[in-house]
Length: 240
Ligand code: FES
Image (tube, rainbow, N blue to C red; front, side, top):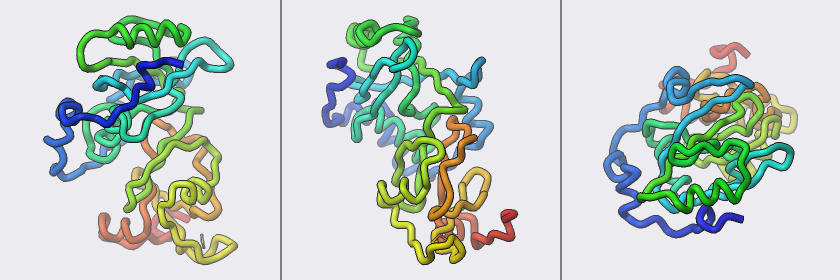
């Protein structure tokens, strides 16, 4: 196991400055469109997308060799670490850039390619990198990789596999969804996915198996829809 990837410390104020946290804290959050998310990556063959992220040291991620093929991926992101802070800025505060997702493959470190390399090679590149930040080139399997889910209004977020039951995801995270029936008819748990405004019954439905995980999967409660969109969440309006 890499030492420096896992060297997890409480971020110092200077780290926050590097991320621009303070500067953006009071900026009214906007939501990136699908086109804007697409502009942050380059789609390549094999249902994959490549992009760069620059994150202060220590990264606060756990790298691991893929079990079934060569290469090193992001196996975990330490809560409160610098990568987690970066994700918060991108996902919640609308910072420019792409968020890091568990399963992303590390193919270059500060411009040195390491695609298909082993953990020792990738770790050494990070360890020997100069400066206060590290630029990783990451590749994401956007058709099969996991999905980043954000619940509104709680703003709790986590990464889940496709086809996972949304209710199980929600209960693991504690996003306070209310359930009032057994058969999926009462509408109390219904949420709208923010990008396409499609209704999801949390008690019955799964994480979509065909979700493009370049875009976060943001689920808004009915109250959140009313407060932010000014309209009630109605199945008729959204084609159910
Ligand atoms: S709890 Fe009734 S529709 Fe989901």
